[in-house]
Image 1 (cartoon, rainbow over the protein chains, first blue to last red):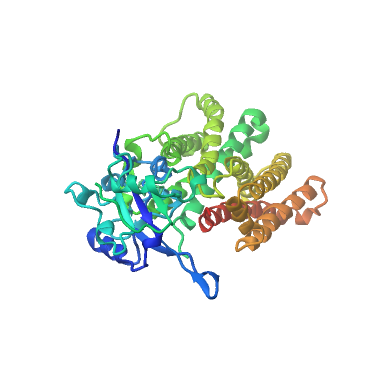
Image 2 (image 1 turned 90 degrees about the vertical axis):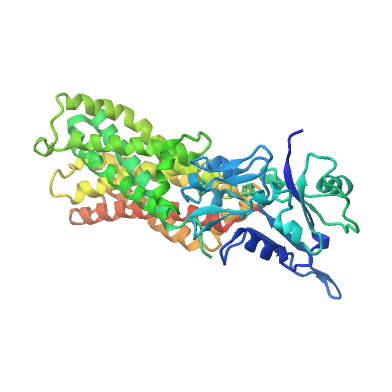
Length: 191
Length: 298
Ligand code: SF4
Ligand code: SF4
């Protein structure tokens, strides 16, 4: 089966250390005041003394039906055969259409390049056999990335074992970050 | 909060519609009005190329990589409204300049006189309405494709089309009234005013249906339309669009049509009502562009 790259993010393991954001910034030279990934807080939930706060890391969902790709007037935004959504900078005119079209706010206008910018799933690391910088660095092992179609991958094993959810399913973008909210005591071995 | 698409895009959407509207006004006046409506056709032709050219220049300035813009014209991405829209606008602007040239008095036709220019005018007048409808509704399709809860509204292209026609007619009324040369006759203004009043009523209906449909859809969509009705854009929506942009010019135009305006007030009333229509049309684009970005899915 074709490769389908995506993420599994375990919210119960995220401690909001933001190391993923730092790692991404230094790996990909992301300019200050912009970020390719994030950690969002649920805010305080419940009533004292039973309160909790959940953290939800995120980034581009490398959607199955990415509106950012279909609106792009020059063909700069593309979905690769392995599912990764990329921007071919030389074709990008900086019209920002893709930025307004992404329902996850995953893109920004890079003031240094004049182009749209977002998570590349660290394509340059993948080809060297490395994991994306955010996954590599994640303290709680909350972030996992891999081939969703390969049953031997960590992401597939997690999805098989735990209930998952995706964000804004009703919009029809087919996002490829699967969230697990349950406690995951151990990360399975795998690719 | 800084918006990704701001005033520049609003100007682009507004001017493209305005040009398309003025073009259609001119074409139809020429085809169906002939000599009696010559001043309307002429002013429509004179207006049409300018707003859209200005809008394009502004859009270019808004690009992150303006020197890369030629990339737009190396490809046709059929799923991207901006791609086919840019081609349509390129064609429209080119043809509108030719059309304007044909309408110039002969002594100004400096690069030669077309032998059968009347025939050319006729052909263009038959073709341009289609292209203009395309350009005007494209501005709505552009937002449609960027699936925000507000922009998803199916009626958006229709709203922008009707608003484009209305602003186009208003711009012709405005210029052909204040110009000392080739000033529109009473009969011409009467018909234009009638058409514009009809368009305003239609626009009100579309806005009403669009908002009702939005309010009855998902929470996100309902909330997005709420930002127009009682949220942060309420004063623009109610005061600048519904009040100044639709109700007042409609009332003024109806009074004009019933000859209820004293002669000495006729000119200022015509000028202000057409100006208000333009103002309202601008803020329709403004509110939709802005509110579409400040309201997301949840
Ligand atoms: S998350 Fe946004 S930027 Fe990423 S693929 Fe989906 S629509 Fe495109
Ligand atoms: S900003 Fe670049 S990548 Fe995004 S839609 Fe425009 S040309 Fe395509």
